[in-house]
Image 1 (cartoon, rainbow over the protein chains, first blue to last red):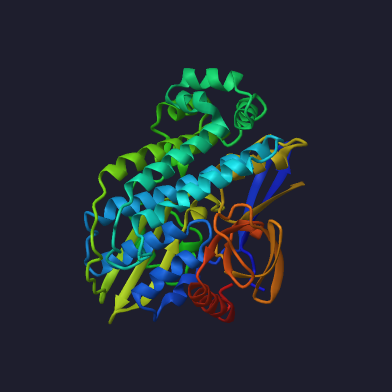
Image 2: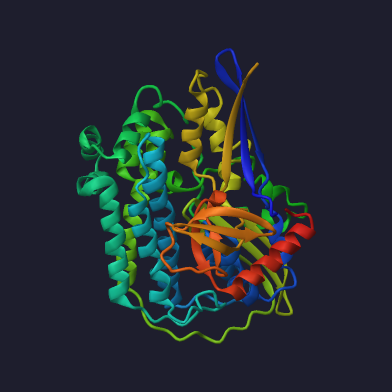
Length: 387
Length: 77
């Protein structure tokens, strides 16, 4: 069998507080080194087939890295088409979380009908942009936008989102007061969960220094990856000792609702979960705008031979970085740094948010909520021992 | 990495499929899958393996399985 990667979080309690947070990871951070020897088109085709949750983002980061290495700037037609692909995956992933996981965390039944609607709608985006299926082609595939299908997909996902949060919930995301009013009265499971995590028992959980990922990644990202001969940086990244948080909260911390929530309780559970809700709604909005800017384009001839390149994509769970070195038309070195390595770093946001937390009979559940808030891309178990 | 193993459907019972990968059989839900699948098709499973996330062409699945076999053989998994 192929071993399933996982995270194990162990909390050590002393004198009624979490004194130590240990995080062990069995994630395969070195596996992409085996891309060495392959052609760029082979790697780009393989990426979406070996990553289940973020296959689109992985392929797009790989294409970005390999095209940069070859000195090929992305064409005006590929940019909005690829952004649409990445956003569709973000909506699909966070939509599944909202429909399946949030109700279960609130003790309610998952809404699998809404989950299926969102995922099916977003799955229709790729063929509506690249009907020939060549979206992973280095240099860009043939873009033939089917605009009515794209608008229908966005409308369908929005309708499913309304099933989960209500039209009033979607409209309430703009202002703190509107959100508070919706939260106080909505009977939906999503609102029940948000009410619970906004309550006095949980409001403080996750507070700790907030170090959001810079917009284009850490300034030293490329140099650190280039110098990482033993894979230590890929497993435990930092930037001058700082371990950034990446993902919805880092991306949405400017948003008026999130800024207001963080002003009250810091980077706690409520702004983390609210940021995901905002991401689904704002991604659908952004997708509508991008559809306006689409143009048809035939796949250009592209020749990727020599050079080194870095590709960055804001994936559902945060910043995804690929770095490649090409020689003679083949990959000689390939590295992938995924958001989970930042967020579940032993000195990262999960550890910062749990250290010092009050112990108590429900510590496992509270820690599991924070794990959910940071959204690892593999299974994650929490255990507690009392010193 | 959140690596996914393409799995071959060996049996279907209602909304649940029995799938095989690397000699291991497991049950997975087809509930989130939009496309029709049949025995012999390859699917990519979501995290934890409890649902099929995507149907994939056989050629791509075999290419991915060859790569994952190498990951296993090289001790990177």
